[in-house]
Image (tube, rainbow, N blue to C red; front, top):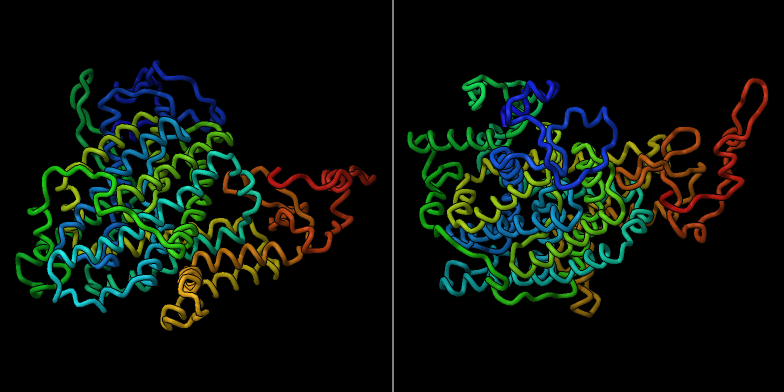
Length: 590
């Protein structure tokens, strides 16, 4: 690990064995260009030595696990699990085991890029809406007066509803991948749909994050401060480490540890601070940061446990639940488009073809189906953090990720692993949530670079979608039972839909962007294919274009005559815009 980062520009002959290129590979993969791949130590199809795969596989595992285990921990609270219920640890282990299986499928027969499957926050909001809408709040249940069997049945009924909804919604994703209509889906989705949908994933969880952090703002703030320092101020700092090479013996190499493991380092330091404050009794009894509050999880969790389909009971589903989870499925598909292109870029290979993207979407659908059957409580998507690891380490080998998948499966079979993650104090986790949801919000706004923000039309669509996407679900949450149509099933469906900020914001963005006329003549540029779909106007100002079929809803747009010609000397010459106008508009996505 340390050696791979220390010298990316040296000649191959001068590198230690750990860095020397492997001549054996499964098959060649076309690269983008020589400048972008010169510093790639191991390309996608390269097969590094086993110890290199193990070292970097552990790195990928730790990077992904740090953020993924937060999802089952959050969901377990809405399932009404007891604070000392060992099922919390079992749920975390199940998630790790499941993600290992799906990662193997994705890297073997899916998109076949070095991508690790992680937990998806796009499923978190719909799952919370489902659990809080169809079922009674946990605070309203007499949990203290229930027997252990009754308490177990309470949370298992809830997770079975989530399982069935995820399993049925995954069929939509499988059909999208198998039928090969991802390009059509991309052509319907504009940046003004993507931005509200993805941004509201993070913004809608601000109250949950604040409640968790309020349990001890001091420890939560410490965790946040450490992550900020590691990721923003110390990311390029290389610390010396002693390494051993069988050719040169012991040597000192430098490693960017803060850039690779910022969250894990922050969790470790904050956890140690909590332990010191606990053993010195500086924290009152029962305080959230005390390490003895959750200390029983690690001791009481079984050493070995095999997750299996139906372990929480046979999955069930409702129409409202499926509709709620389906919004998370669509958001996950949108997110994957950019993840595939980003991973290909940092791994030094050409953009994945359409058939590879279709396979990737289909395999993720199968992964979500497996998640519904085995009972993870959430769907799966590509881990964005691991794409950043590849960019830092310059190791894009698929085999490394497969090693990481085996580590996920192994630790998922060890019950103690789930107990270890659950034992992390809640205020420490709250600090991670603050950074994670902040970055999800910012990532959702990246598509703004493809929008003309000088356009009052675009500003209206964006602002209205975001504002109502926050306001309407929050109002319905504070006023339960407002929707009364006389049909219970319809009431549940409407409530679940309108309480989902992602759906409200994304639907409004799509509808308004499709129906409100555009004042500029726009065409597509290839660069938007890397992010989902990028629009670029003829004048060089990026602006959203007309959605497919919208000609029936809006008047035709006539380009500015100045855009049709450019001057060559003193003579006007018909330019690309003019040729495009005479030939007619190109098909969507071209």
